[in-house]
Length: 309
Ligand code: GRG
Image 1: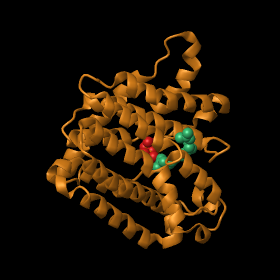
Image 2 (image 1 turned 30 degrees about the vertical axis):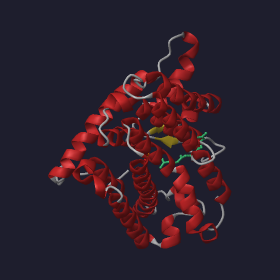
Image 3 (image 1 turned 60 degrees about the horizontal axis):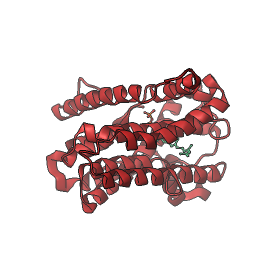
């Protein structure tokens, strides 16, 4: 994102993102603290990954969706923190030797490289568990009816389980090593709708629910998130190809080492780009009824395919 060439709308979006990211980072910082010496090592491992440099896309989506339906940050921040905790735990577990076996994440050694596999597993478990506690404990129930909070907790649980991250990851593992053509676009989309879109979907739906949006609006949020989720993943695959082509001869892209199903492999690079653009267009269509009030969500949809990391 180049601030110099950005139009006014882009500059406004950028200002919004920077200010919300700052607020989210402060809330994350306060969310995990060791209060007795026995918690020190675990809390350190949790904070190491949680506070590392991430884009905070999911928490910002919670805040922006809540705002769109007339709510404010105080109502949504506990849920914003919770979704980043879940996202972060999924990254810690995804990086483990039993899964993707990665050494670096968010510009630093992965959690298990720094703290060992045993502590990394526990840090992930604890973050997952604390996420639910955080919503239940910190959402201001004088302003958000408990039924909405319960609905948000239910949806967060679903976005992790059989209809969410864990299912997407399990299917991904099942497809590993299979030729891309055998996996096919349908299964690949299923994986990403669960692995990547699930938390984005949760984020905008939860923000809307906390603010008191009705079922129809929540559905529009879902349609938006499914499309940006897929677009996000396609953009990621495209970035992988482009960056590994740029560094060809120096370091081979991680993707080229294994026969992993990706959109560029199945559709080709240009068709993948077009598909991502089409999905962003559809995501924005789902927001048409809100006009300019949805400016932030509209801008984020564009940002997803323009980002460089
Ligand atoms: C949830 C119980 C449970 C287990 C975890 C490992 C796992 C199951 C799921 C994997 C989920 C995963 C790693 C999905 C990929 C999501 C994704 C697009 C990550 C990158 O997100 P960014 O770009 O990263 O938002 P930053 O670092 O900016 O937050």
